[in-house]
Image (cartoon, rainbow, N blue to C red; front, side, top):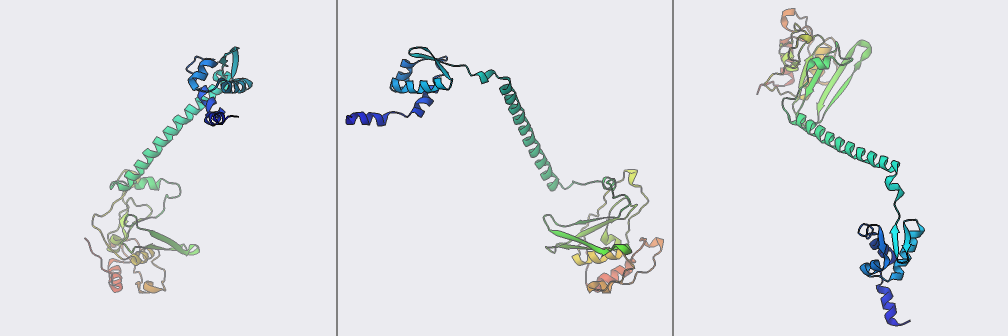
Length: 282
């Protein structure tokens, strides 16, 4: 075989390339293709084009009309009802996906707004309406944003007593708010220590504001919160460790003292001074 023939063979496109290029003629020739014109357009030997046509005929995609003319067979799947149903289903799924993406973006924006919005709140009556919270004492503890805090609850269920310990890893100031059963608002724990107790005169269904928070910030060490909460809920308990040993014995309180139970104002102030804590209003 001459050397120039070998060079010509190496320059010939593969059958795969010829087939791809030949398929592109389908939309430009109206479904009927003259193989001589196709060979000139694709710049391939006609015999190579015949090889491609024979394969397409074998799989039922083409039929020979005349010696050098072939036509594309109509794809029966184009008008198949099941195919149309699948396409409709795909369109519906695409719309649903777009709707879900929009909902996710909307919820993400709403969540971010709630985190950055200073007026975001929840009504106490809505919390009271939750199953299992009717007639329960509610405690809220706040800390700085992004501060990691932990709450441990222990005690003796048999004796109806429990102990709550609130800690902040960053040792940042914490604030505690108490809402006993039957009361209509939260009260700062430090206000309770100073004798300013909540008033149960208003009913929860009266539509009154559900959360009452003093504007002044009261800073206190985290360990004190455990002492105060434990004293408020279990004034008769005898403490036996660390700073709990310094808690005074609760004295009987009169109704005009402002607290239904627990320590009097002077007893709590004396205790805090003994512990070395200073309460200040910024």
